[in-house]
Amino acid sequence: MAYSILSCASLPATSYADSPQQVDGKFRNTAPREQPGLFKTAAIMWRFATGKPADTVPRQALPVQALSQADLLAAPDRSLWRLGHSTMLLKIEGKFWLTDPVFSERASPFQFLGPKRFHAPPIALDDLPPITGVILSHDHYDHLDYDAIQQLAPKVAHFVAPLGVGDRLIAWGVPAAKVQQFDWWQGTTIEGLRLVATPAQHFSGRSLSDGNRTLWASWVLMSGQGSDQVRIFFSGDTGYFDGFKAIGERFGPFDLTMIETGAYDAQWPDVHMQPHESLQAHLDVKGRHLMPIHNGTFDLAMHPWTEPFERITALAANAAVPLVAPVMGERLDIRTPALSKHWWRDAAQPQTARTKMTDAQSAPLPRL
Image (cartoon, rainbow, N blue to C red; front, side, top):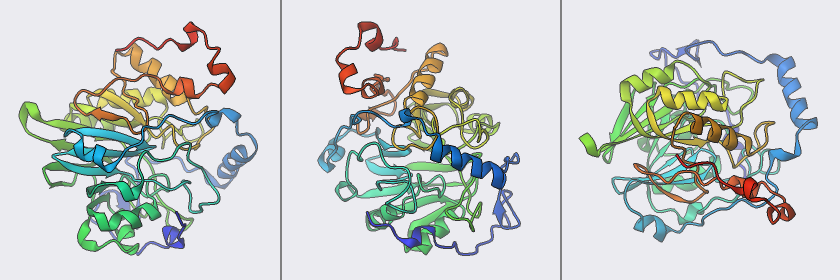
């Protein structure tokens, strides 16, 4: 996909003075975020440039279950497919929804530089069926893909985003009539799906000049009534904070939580969660099945690429939490999703080592 300079072009100046989250034209977290400063930022960049371990990327091609439009149209309602990173495709009330669609080869303003995908998307953008809605959590490059938005705009009826992110879409040429944007605790109902933007602890921006001029959010998705209702929580990007408990009190319990578990580091503790915090967030929002996301597609931190999967697997087992970690492109039933089969372990082995694994090494963890 061709990179466009518009993906980091200046954002139209829009004031949301009525938002409790905005002060002096900038959005903020409920609790102040640690500002890394120039020295710490330079040190982090130096670590990435000179100290990157080899195991932050896979040694083998990752398994991907290819999808076709016919597969999606024939799938039962309340299906979900993980397409990569935080990009999920959901089929609810017979309609298709995408979260944070990123299909480009790199999560970067440049398609010749920056974090490169470990795997191709299970389906090409052109092969997707008509999409009722795109749900956006914030405007970072690994969540908001300019080229994907340009290709999706003609086939998407609704774009649902936090405050300011919608302004960016409109500046990119998405018709304003298709865009709805919300503050925390605000939302809408579209084609039988209720969507509520809920708090998160993160930051925003796509250039040096537009930091925190757009809001970030998690999302609550609800469909159906009574015992037939399905509830989903999508965390977007976030550090751990007490907002999860408030979300759980208002909207829990959830059939499925899709919670950030990856790209964490001790150097940025308040904007990305460690795996034990991801588990606690799942418990706080009163989730049943936990799906760790924000992992397995891009190299965005210093930890081994399999570490988020392994750590959350052990933590979930100890807490008796059913863990859902599908192969990219695998169909899941939202109410009763298949549990993790630990596919990443085989993919992490060198080709020669894969044929020499002992039974003890290859044995899966007990299913919950």
